Structures are given as C-alpha cells and as structure tokens.
Image (cartoon, rainbow, N blue to C red):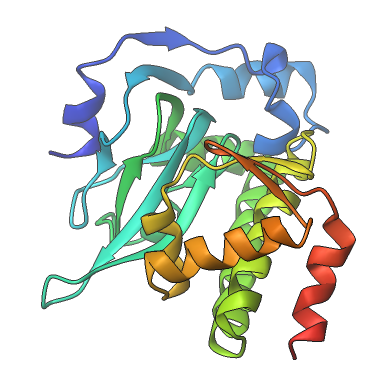
Length: 244
C-alpha cells in the first residue's frame, strides 16, 4: 500500500503553519506572512495513524515530503534475504521522504511506534514554491545534509565502540533531538521497544537490558516503564570516554 492509499483512510485537515508549535523546526522562520500563507496552501495534515501502521513500504511510489507532526516512527531496511535492520528513528518535526526526491521510489519502510499524525507536501508543489522562495530549497538541502551527516556519525560511532558505549551514544542522540524540540534532555520517552533499540545498535535485546540495568544500579539513570530519566547526564556521557 503506498502513502496515498494509506492517507485516504484518515481525516485530512488544513494546517496553519504559523500556529503550529513545530514551525521553527520544519522550515525557515524568516518567511514573510505572504510566503508562510503560500506554504500553508500546499500542506495537508493526516491524522489517525496508530502503532504498527505503515506510513509507506520500501518500493512504494512517494510523491510528497512527509513531516511528523506528532508521535514517532522507525525506518526499516530489509535485506534480500529478508533480514530486517532498523536504520533510524523519527520524531515530531522530522522530515521524511528526502531519500526519494529524485527516483520517487522509497528505499525503506516507515512504521509508526505510537499514535501519530503527519503533514505532507507534494514534491511538485514544493519545487514550484521553492523557485519563488529560495529559502525553502536551501532549508531542504540543509536538512538533507544534516540527516546524512548525523547518520554517518552514528554509524561510525556504532562501529568503533563497545556495546555499553553504543547504548550511551544512542541515549545521547535521543537527548539531543529531544532538547532540539524544546523538551528536557534528561527525561526521555522511549516510544521504541528494547528489541528495536537492540536491532538498531546491532546488539542482543538481553545485552541492552543488562546495560540499562547496570546504569540504573550505578545511579546514572532511572527507568519507569517507557520513561527514562538521566539522573546524572554528564557522568553517563563520560562513560563513552572512560570505556575508550
């Protein structure tokens, strides 16, 4: 099922970008009122996604950019042998669809981790508007560059660090992204399962659970269901250097 088929099952509403709490994360805040209105005219909101719903599957035709408005999702890559590898997690304000702006076919699948809503912008309409508002094009290129750069840094970190360090780097990344959204970097909501975290880090689920339990015993964090409080953020981050 492609994105257009999926979206047809949900209620679509007009989005007022200037009233949205994510407006500073999505696109340039230097847009004039007229430019913001022009952007609003090509944005559509889709509500009603639930946990385990697919936004799109690998190989689907995608003709729009997607911004997560609420909730979170994971990106899956399936090998030719059927092995599933998680290659990313996405949260409110994150932009999806940048990997297929040229060939239109998605390389990955995106699955929601919880109830969610998204905003979509058709590629064609966005390209036309970008010619009139160059800041939009620059912003998309910046977001694409940042996404690729961060992915490369995380891959490098995962390849060169121990299991314990990988978990710390993962938590550090979650904290950074949460702080960027105006939330506390010390209180994390883990919408993904430990199995998902383990898959993403290339570890066994039992290993991830053991490491988190160790950090909890050491007073570095506290766990309550899917909420994780970093009780000593700096000491936890120092573990990466200490284990090197």
